[in-house]
Length: 567
Image (cartoon, rainbow, N blue to C red):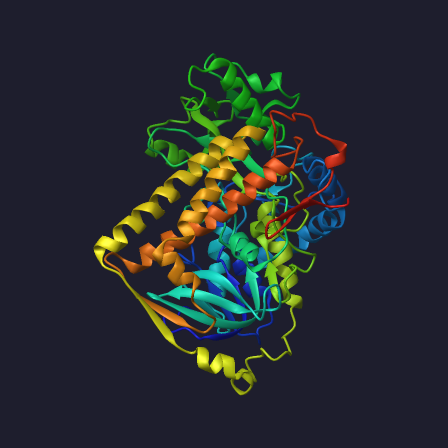
C-alpha cells in the first residue's frame, strides 16, 4: 500500500524498489512491519530496464553444474564458489516462484522459452520478449501493493544510515520526504538501491542509479569489496540525442553481427567466439578497434546488424528494441544500429555473506548494491536478475530483532539523550546565497561522470587515475564546505529539518544528495582501480595488461583503508 503519512517506526526498512527490493519485501515474514522506500516512483529502477532475461538451468540438456561452470569462467578467478553453487541450484525453484506470482515468461508451446547469451554454454535465459525486467518488476509491484504489512514510501530519499555508535548496530535512517528531513527507526535496514552507472558519462543505467546504497554504507563504516570491477556493455545505442539505450545481449545470441564501417565482423580478430565472447572482451574489442580505425575514437561507433536474424524472430523477440530504434529513425530490418560500449553493471559493492548480512549488525544488502561473490570480476549475462531473486528470498529467514530497538518497547526505553534530541532546525537562504551553491553542485554533478569515464572507463592507467583521485578529493573538500553541506552534516539523530529555498526544495536536496553519493563512489572506484595493478574481467589497466595470479584476490575497502584479501 502507498501512503503519504508515513510511520517513523518499522521492523524493516527496504531501500530501493527494483527487483531486489520488491522481492525481498515480499519474501519477508508477513508479521513484520516493512517500509519500502524509493526515491522516484515504484516502477523506475534499473531492473525495469533489464531486457535480456534471467538465467536458470531448467532444460533437459542443462544443469546447475554447467551454469556454475559458465559463471565461474566469466568471473575470472574471483567468484565465491559456494555463492555461485547456491545461485545456480536455487535458480529453477526461484523461476517457479516467479511464474506462480504471475510473471509471464515467453513460451514455446507449454514450455518456457530459452535463449542463448554470451558466455553461456546452453540456452538457459528466460525472457518476456525484450522487456523481461519490466515484466518481473510490474508483477512484483502488483504483489507488494496488495500486502498490508508493506508501506511503500515514494519520492523519498534515504540520506544516511543511523547507527547506535560508529560501526555499531543499525537503528534506522535519515530520510528526506515531502520537503523535510526526519529520522525513521528500524530494527533492520536492507539496501537494494542498485548500481552507480551515473558516475560514468556513458551508461545504460537510469538516472536513479547514483550508487546511493554503497555510498551510505561506506560513510557508515561498512566493508566494501571489488569496486573497480565495472561491466561495460558492448552495445549501447549511440544515435545523437538518444539516451544510451541498451541493445540486449540476446540480439547477438539470436544471431546479430557486430561489424565496422567496412562491414567486417572484426570481433573475431580479438576472440574466437566473436560477438559471443564475454562482455568485457567484446567491449575492449570495440574500444581497441575504434582506436585503430576511427578518426575520433571518443565519438565513433561500430554497427550491430540484426538482418541475419529472421524478421519474424526479430518481431517476436525484440519489439521494444524495434520501437526505440524507430523513434530515432533506425529501421532494424534494413540497416544496422550504431552502437558503442557504456557502463552497465557494477560487480563490486557492499560485502555480504550468504544471508545478505554486511559487516554492520542489522544492515543487509541485496542485488547490485551487494557483493555476494557470484559475479567475480565479470558478471555472466542474465545472472543479475537471478541474483536479486535468489538472494532476496534469503531474507525470508530474517527473524524479528529482540533488542532494545524493538518497536514494541521503543517508547519505554528511549534514553534521556534521545528525548532532548527531538527538535527541529530550519535552513532558510535567499537567492543570492543559494545560487552559487546550487551552481557549484550542478557543476560537480555534470563533471564527475566525464572525469570518471575518461580516467576509469574501459581502459585505465596509473597517471590518469591518480590525477582523477586528486580532482575528486578537491571537489569533495569544496562540497563539504558549502553552507548547505555544513547544515546537513550538523543534524543529530532524531533532529528534523525543514527548508526554505528559492527554488524547488525536493529537486535541490535530491541533486545535493546524489552529488554527495557520486563523489563518494567516484573516489572509491578510482582508488580501487589504482590499487589493483593487473587486468582482470571488467578492470583493464593499459600499464598492467596481464592477469596476475598474485591478484587472484579481492580488493577490500573500509573508510579510507584499502587492502587485498588473503584468497
